[in-house]
Length: 93
View 1 (tube, helix red, strand yellow):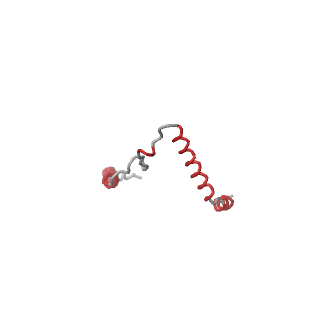
View 2 (cartoon, one colour; view 1 turned 90 degrees about the vertical axis):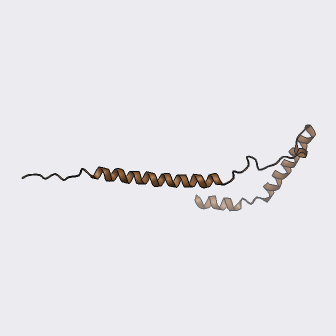
View 3 (cartoon, rainbow, N blue to C red; view 1 turned 45 degrees about the horizontal axis):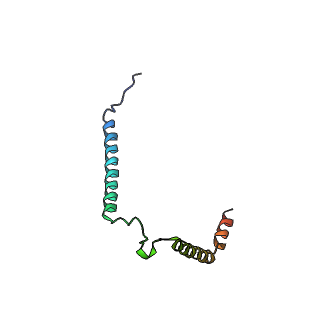
């Protein structure tokens, strides 16, 4: 019996070409996403704008702001309804 070898010399080039096409498509997609995102104006670093009247200059300003924050926190806590969260957690267990 004689064995016949198949001529597979050209298959490496096809695989390399497919890899090259894949890298080109992925690169083009990445470039497109980056260029669209850079066209959007970036958001400011801080969304809160501090006015001169909001500056803390002494201890009484600090205490006043502390009271306001505490009151805001208590209002938020009273408005929260955690029964839905409890029901969701119980359903997962």
